[in-house]
Image (cartoon, rainbow, N blue to C red; front, side):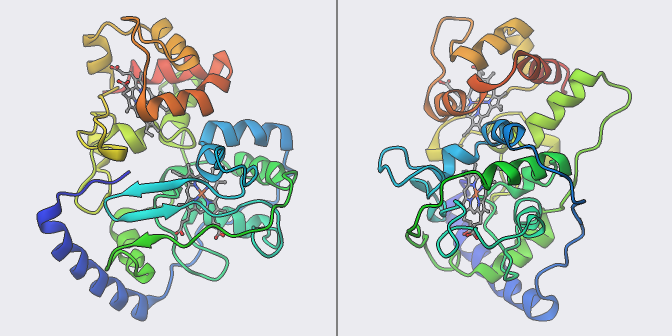
Length: 298
Ligand code: HEC
Ligand code: HEC
């Protein structure tokens, strides 16, 4: 998901790792600044949120038959290879001993129950925008999943990216846990679209450029990414670009449902997977909300 330019990145990363260790020694992992209210979760709604958020696509290896949410296929990045862990309710190998609060802290702040930082490849910068209700529903759905034994292999990351503590600095510089706030001057549908695109649906994670450290500059969001996941070019999907290419609201809804672009081409690569595993399952109302937002996003 991240593609820094290689020449300077090693030096920069070593500096970051050193500084990260220092910051960690001085401050330790950040305290939780979001306390989830104890809401009653609806597992059925939670299943929908899991689709919307792509949890299933990353944490399930459909080819190996390891089991639903029992660990994903390898995720190649310029920092090394990540393995999405087993997140079934298995007590030893999954997250069966976790509480809703621990789950919420992992998903919205990138901190484990032991206080370790997670890599942002687990998209908590986006998920931090999710509502307490969505997280509670997701948690209720996770608990209905069949527990599966077996841990995923360790990540295979080059030095210094294998130093988890350095993530403390990364988070200090580039991450703020920020629940979504409605823009009162926009419609209900626009706000729902904004929530999906920036939050659980994480469209901005691929469709925006990233800096050397794999972080986004929000002012550049949706302007495209020349080097997206697996080195793929990801097009701009802000209003200016979609309008220039004659995309209508109906075209966007149709493409997210079926994978066909208005010129008849099939959307492929990682977008093909996003459509198959996520947007094809969404309600018409949510797809229209996404289109309303994209066509009115500078
Ligand atoms: C792009 C792939 C990707 C997506 C999408 C994704 N994850 Fe993950 N997830 C990962 C990776 C990789 C890790 C391991 C991170 C680390 O080791 O720091 C992880 C870690 C986790 C953990 C910590 C598990 C543990 O044993 O400590 C939980 C819980 C989790 N993810 C739940 C979710 C949920 C819920 C969603 C959807 C809202 C989700 N993930 C979406 C890739 C993903
Ligand atoms: C994992 C990365 C990834 C994510 C997440 C992602 N996209 Fe894409 N998207 C792509 C890639 C790559 C393409 C180019 C596909 C092609 O040309 O075959 C694309 C193409 C598109 C296009 C067609 C644009 C054009 O001009 O051809 C639209 C519209 C789109 N994405 C919308 C979305 C929306 C809405 C979301 C969030 C629900 C999203 N994408 C999430 C990678 C991603």
